[in-house]
Length: 194
Image: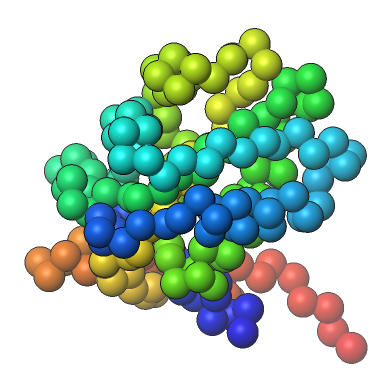
């Protein structure tokens, strides 16, 4: 079951703009972030939940979507996310909790997949522009990550690394998103023997 969720949890960048995510669903997804481990149990990561078209548009315009796809400006208007969760670090509770961000973001994305949605973690953010537009007090909060959510409309295929593409993800002529992955053999540097 977990393996299936992880395999379905890809970095989706194109969504069905007509499939809305309710605030109740966003709250349920965010509730998973409350119960995960936290550095020194600081629980410094807070959530901003957004699903209104107006705020979605503001957030979208502050994000960079796919650095390796230099000729792709991001999803078309009808393929944009229908919800976002912004991860904010409460600066009174902790700074630079990047381990927490990763644990929380992956957990939230797995929760979204379980509900039939998908998403993408985005760190390429015009942070000051986003803070200003959404009235985020940057003396109190740091914007760590933005998680874009929606009903995926793209196919993402995992494949072995080739000489042609290396580790660079790419889209083919059918707009299928290909993600090269290193072999497990290449990742394991040591195995104990019995």
